[in-house]
Image (tube, rainbow, N blue to C red; front, side, top):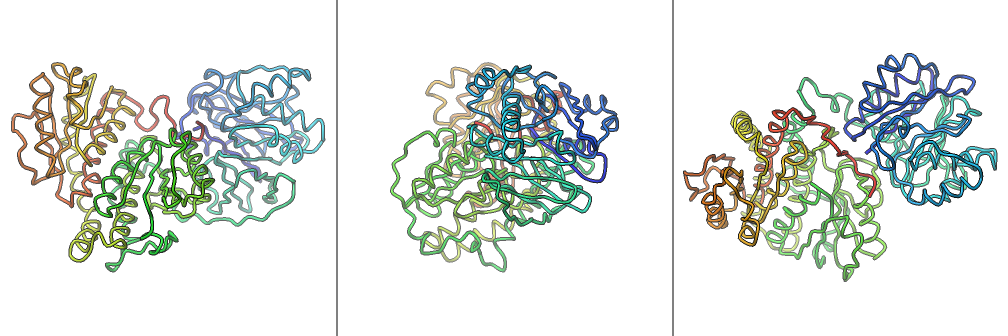
Length: 611
């Protein structure tokens, strides 16, 4: 959530900053602002409520703001309503110190009271204004920016990526981060700062990933890193391999539709990276076969769609590898006191690698001496750096808030891990092991065939667009697909949607079925189809409009059901990778038909870096 961009160098800063902020719109925001300093250090601030276009119009695309150094921000309201007053950047009374901030300052109330006792007044409701004036307080006390920022870090609790301009230091940006992402870039033309790589990839591929409590000084001449003791530290740049075009629409109407159609390639890239010449190679995870044989159980944790990947993986891992698995919502798991033996492997799933609750759960497990494995899509992210082992998916940049291709890549990661564990532990071998590997390599082609359903799904969506309630039901892996399908629908269409294990309907939920209620059944697990069909028939007898998604060879599905969508056959453990594609398309087309902002749904952010 929120986005920061900063630039200092040999060209006008405001157009660069506004361009970068547009690349971060996917993170979600309700207001925006930019601050630019001239060669004398005088700082101009422009802020606006609403979309970046409003800010762009106010500044003529940044051309009205003159200066070679600046910072910008898109805000997603946490403290105080969306307004120009609460928008970033924030400043001290003299406008000599200006800052932007992502994250949450948890102790901002006592800090604010402390500052008020020292004569400070406040014009906004934000924790960021408090942060800015705290920096101001320590700057006036010590007269040195690095000391002011290190003192700030010592006195605040919470998460932050903070970038600051000081009038006394024209052409320089000072920054610090803790538990909120911040990347740094540098070329001969200047230095860049951003919340995520796409914002600055147009200008440089050389990216520095910052660690907690890194203080950064950016100038036209270079980038310098310091620790909290203000001692200079060395960091190595990472060269980003994917190009800026990967984060552009490329002629597609929406990023989400583009990313749905990128899934065959994403799955192919992830499979082929780890499975080639018939050999499954997970050596880069640094998990020895001896260790894998000795694992007592697996805990999977994540939030939202990442948690849903874990639900699929629970069924796959237990069935293939015969190892106990439990799946935990990260925001719950971080506050529990689980009973641990020390022989667990904790798998933390996060697209961004910065998800606050998942990162906290990871740290809790490490403090308990439990080995951790991260499945992430972002190189150098916090979760990737702090986990004992990392599985990098090959999804490339995902811009739409509602995840599609990152979810699919995470599924593949879990299939590969399950297959490796099954082989090492002797649960799967011989011909069936070869068949499973072969099916993984065929998934991209079968996802392509599933995408061919789009016209049929679009027509169905046009008939369902006025529904007020939708229920997804399934059993086993089909239930896991149902909860992800329901989330996709509610995220972007704003239609009330729920998912249930089919056997639970009769325990209360069936009372919600009325004439015309849409019930979508997922039917891919052969030994469970008959049971789920029985539940669907129950809803139909109470007036539900029943549609089902089934495999090509699935039998026993009543022709009286209103719609039956068919997807290609695969091994039953991998059906989630096909079934979810059709449901992503259904959610997408419903959202478009209802006139919603598909890529930036209301109230949501791509990277949830605060609790």
